[in-house]
Amino acid sequence: MLDTVDGPADLSRLGLPELRTLAQEIRRFLVTEVSRTGGHLGPNLGVVELTIALHRVFDSPRDVLLWDTGHQAYVHKLLTGRKDFSRLRAKGGLSGYPSRSESEHDVIENSHASTALSYADGLATANRLRGFHDRCVVAVVGDGALTGGMAWEALNNIAAAKDRPLVIVVNDNERSYAPTVGGLADHLATLRTSAGYEAFLQRGKEILTGVPFAGRTLYDALHGAKKGLKDFLTPQGLFEDLGLKYVGPVDGHDLVALETALRRAKGFPGPVVVHCLTRKGKGYRPAEEHQADRLHAIGPRRAAPRATGPSWTSVFSDEIVRIGAERPDVVAITAAMREPVGLEAFAAAFPERTFDVGIAEQHAVTCAAGLAAGGMHPVVALYATFLNRAFDQVLMDVALHKAGVTFVLDRAGVTGNDGPSHHGMWDMSILQVVPGLRLAAPRDGARLRARLAEAVAVSDAPTVVRYPKGAVPDEVPAVGHVDGVDILAGSAEASADVLIVSVGAMAATAVRVGEALAGAGVSVTVVDPEWVQPVAPALTTVAGRHGLVAVLEDNVVVGGVGSVLSHTLREAHVSTPVLQFGLPRCFLPHADRSELLEEAGLTPDQISRSLLDSVTRCGLLDDRRAS
Image 1 (cartoon, rainbow, N blue to C red):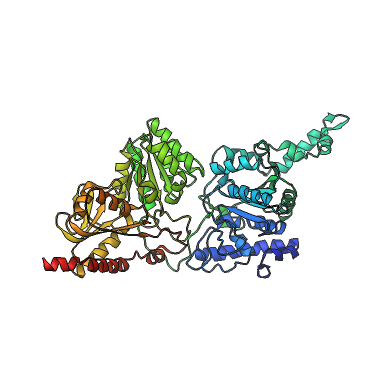
Image 2 (cartoon, rainbow, N blue to C red; image 1 turned 120 degrees about the horizontal axis):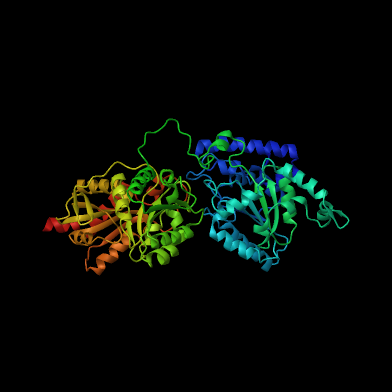
């Protein structure tokens, strides 16, 4: 069946038996292909029937289908003609999220949660203003994404729009990355179909049939009022109190029920919520039974296991537990990512001091400010890319109030195959403008432990410790130290041609560049500041003894560490020119980290050649030989 489907229109000719066969084939395809390449398996196995039904009921791309957060759009890709998954999430292959460059069926390509409803509100409004009254906008949003405040801002506005067709499909699988938390999760639990639900309805029918009402039974009266028994018995108040029409709960794996519900919603002239119950990992036992995350995402299959050391995340995990044992005031906060950011062990050891706020980074940060005001020291652990969403809270709620909050940013820098929305390449530029903030980018595991301990000791300002994805590199030892700056090669006391300032994970690259330059007759000092913000005064002094400064960072070059150091040197009347080696100001595609660093010119060979050219143009070698 899958071979016969090249676009959504092909689904209309299939009968129910063929559609069920198609669903089975799609699941086999996903398990085979995603196990080979890596990717988001569990979420997509859970939306097979839902995606088929959506494309049968709605006319994409005339009717717009939006996916929040987008990691469950693999089935959508298959049904819109994109069947080559051989290079999924690899350079030149399919993106792991909707991508406008791939298909007209992908209208947005966001992969930050809780945003699709705002897009939907805007698109539906545009349809009304342009007179497109026969078009519908559909947003598929998970119960996890509904824990994000932005989703409720959108719902508040959508509910006021009675005159435009907009369908909100709540894909309720009780999980985002991990089990959904909070009051919304509790409410949705009351709406879910349980094993005893049909028996519950039958018993309700029996009771209501026995109650006389205006000359007939209450059961008949409810039907006469066009209000079914399920509507009477099910607590739908959350959505209907907002003024939204509600349909459901619907079995998200029953094609007939799904189509009936979606067609009913499509025929309504205003906004409608369709509540679908799905099972993450449906049809693949390892995914269904995986208790940690139901195989939310898996890595690629490898020919043989590769020996790797501990990950950055695991080093943080061990250290925060140690700190927590010594400091009863230290608490941990995360936004629906407790396991990915390494807080599982802390939560097991100190459950009453661990807070998962759902997909609500803004709330996480301001809540942390409140905890700090109350005498605690919060550690907010997030992916670097997700701190972008809470910048105002970092600036105004934490820094302005001089709150002692530590931010631990995982997956900083180039993260690889999740693509442009997941690269943690903006944080050092964004955070440099925050008054009083201290920012560290440790180069190895030992430095991560040291910087984290120092960060939680700061009680009157925000601190940030950021590190990349993957295994911790071999330790890069210091050969000297001067006032907050580690010397990795050369001497801080002597003058030299080039000063290389390494930032975080670029340390090994910086050392290799220094060796290459030394081999070419260039005198070099390589340093690694313990804290890159604020700039250590010693770094300004050392820079003044060199003919050229080169800053290596895996952050966007605009506004990054190099920019701030250049500004600091000018203010100190140090005339040494600064060259910045960082990521370009653009959205990097999905590819391996090594491929993206090479494209950005950040390999040791590329940086060495560039610096040698600069040394030659500056005449540093000629000046030294003449002297």
